[in-house]
Image 1: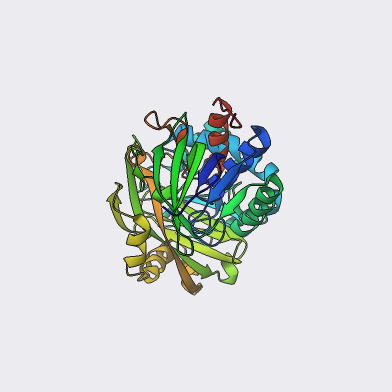
Image 2 (image 1 turned 90 degrees about the horizontal axis):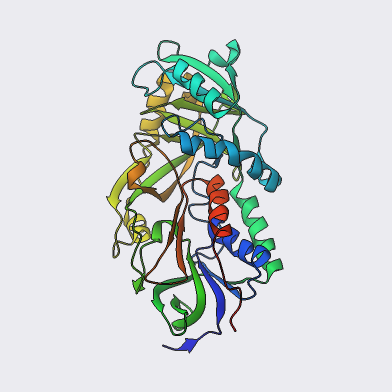
Length: 379
């Protein structure tokens, strides 16, 4: 062990949207003075916060999970209010219901939208004409948005700097252990520096797919997690699909959403986007698995199937694919629910693990944090 850092009020592990938001919250709302954020990449919001569908959900996606749908309805206007510059609203969003193999009918979907208070109306004929009528039962115009992860990263960088949060990039935390007098010890390692031992009062584990990859006294999450290697295909949309976001529900179907960070669209398919999956456990590093995986695109299969429902997609131009590890709670595989994971580790007093499946879940995290009692500084 080469060095020991000064005491920190809190160490945040993970510089994605959740980690950055929690660090800012602790500084601004809870009076923490000494906060260290540790991120394994060379910049903020470059992994799961960036490599995703960039959808700000409004509930439509979750007809089999009322709680997730309703929470999205509550959270979307807050997200638009708090990050207006990062939210793209200037596109038309359509949800279409497939005639076969869909887990909801058009009438069920309409009723569900009314129940959660989500706006919905029949799409005009010119938009309906984009779809193959023999395969699509109905098409609806809805309100749903996209976000630009690069603009969120810019916000995070400015706010963290203003709050005086110290950031250590290209650094991995390897151990979390109990210290003395209600402290925690965090072991951090970078390629450039010797191993560091950091003493702190609180640890917030916001590492998403790496949430269980710590040694020491860290017990792991009580809730079971599943890891998936996923592919988002970035496409240049043809003129007929420019300015549109499209989702075909609800089963083995697809979405084509604007991706504001690149001025492109993401194409994802329930059957072809997941490449490989496994039950999460300590010792199986998800990021190593991703790096070792052959990133062979399935975009041809995606386009071929999507083209049956939406013929114009056959004119889209493939640019590249975003491969990432997606982490989901095993208990929600059947209903597609996306609740947050928020665990206080009793074996490590002061250590929390936080994981969310959607960007707007950040408000559910902040609500949880509001109910926690923290000592903001060391005495």
